[in-house]
Image 1 (cartoon, rainbow, N blue to C red):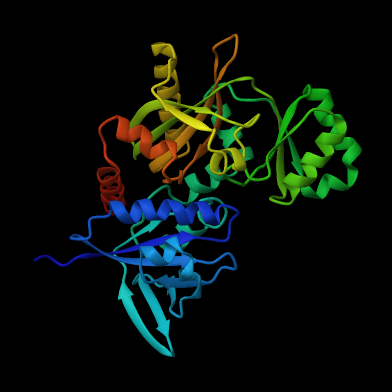
Image 2 (spheres, helix red, strand yellow):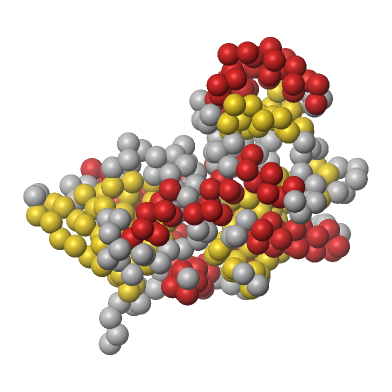
Length: 351
């Protein structure tokens, strides 16, 4: 019998999406072929401590956070996982890493840089694509070169917040209320809010400032929220069909995504075929120009009245929860989550 591949599956993390990651990883664990892979479940606490989880049950009940086993990946090119328990140290050569981390310190190029230093094949986008896609301001600048429509915006930097009157004037000169205010680097709509007047704009900017030093104030696009998954790299990028978000709240914020059962996802919604193809083609183009690798979910609006496609954002490590759009879209194409996970691991090895 051939030797199993040592697969490090990393979850949790220091971002505001820690809990979502702990749900996503359970889907990944179930999908991994245990006949082929020896799995090492590495949980990162909100404080940034790396611990070895015993099993999926410890992730489900949260007891992994009390683990006495410290487990860290070294930056040495031998790609070692160092495990310390009660003063005893052991090492395991990691053959592949699967980061199931959303948001900062997981989806932003930081842990990808560690894998590069360690010479460990890893699932998902590389350093540049992760950085450029996580930073919404940077994404907009890159995507602008494609000529794909996106919401107009005004960038706001933390060190300018002392002159709030000047910021408000810039926004009001360029955009009309209502506007959306977003941290440039945050996921799952954390810190995002809608502003309908000057007072609510100031409150929204201060809220976004709690999540990031760069903030985007965007025009409000009224329309349907459409998402498309991509899988692959280089000249072999496959786009899924499209799905629609029916948010229970006024917009699809963190609470509407994960805490409101009235929010729904619709696979293969009633959208003109030519618009579906435009979205799929735009998703591939955006993924390619950002040097994407492996997987991403690309989000759009289909504007009300005009039916114009408007790019919103790209997520390079989309959720894998039971209500997450990415796996559902590929499941609808006949690609099971088990096959999807295997494809992603094989692509990591190819790179």
